[in-house]
Image 1 (cartoon, one colour):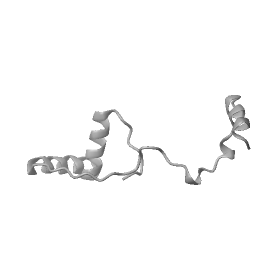
Image 2 (cartoon, rainbow, N blue to C red):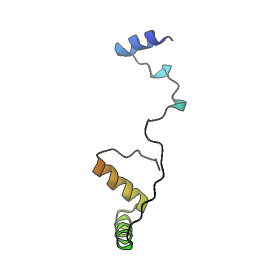
Image 3 (cartoon, one colour):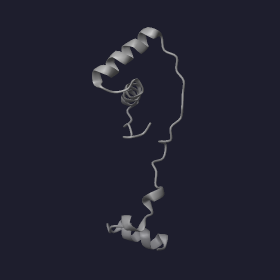
Length: 79
């Protein structure tokens, strides 16, 4: 299907998802990038206590808190 036809179908509200190859689709900006941060021991202890209380890993807790502070949703299942 040509782009012009695809665009006109999309703009008219027709279902076009069956015309897409979603097997290679991905969200932009969700690639993991490793960073190292040094925390004082008391902070790591506090993070670990809160993570245990919530039943999540320390890394997950840090990601959730940072995402909340930055106002961005956390992608489920992403590391």
